[in-house]
Image 1 (cartoon, rainbow, N blue to C red):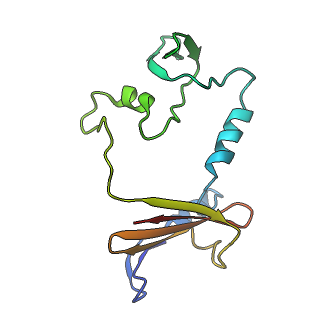
Image 2: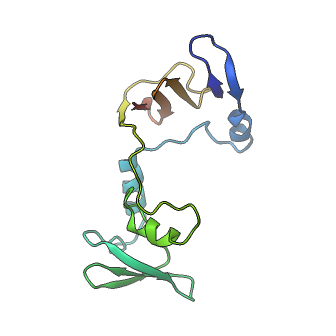
Length: 157
């Protein structure tokens, strides 16, 4: 793996992710659909653990090792962990990182638009190429093999 010049075939840089993955019996990449990940996480929890339709206003770590979260509907809920899967404007992330040098409290548009999809295709070299990144002036394209003979791709411009 590495960065390869698509026109000349010359390597800009190479890095060995293959050896590390093989040493630990892992595939070169592990990509899972966001929806499959959310379903897997939710399905593994006991009934009543997931709270939808309320936002976290603040939270605190408890001496017992758990977390107490205050929700915007006034409820306070306690748990072992708090998973902040609430996107780029994450209130959980903002609360966690407040005061850390370099933390950008309000994300700004980086100038890229991203298109993504999953398709029924598996590249012939998927077992030896973890992912591919094609770079161009002001744009790039990423493809990665995922489970069940599918490829996930991202196009940025």
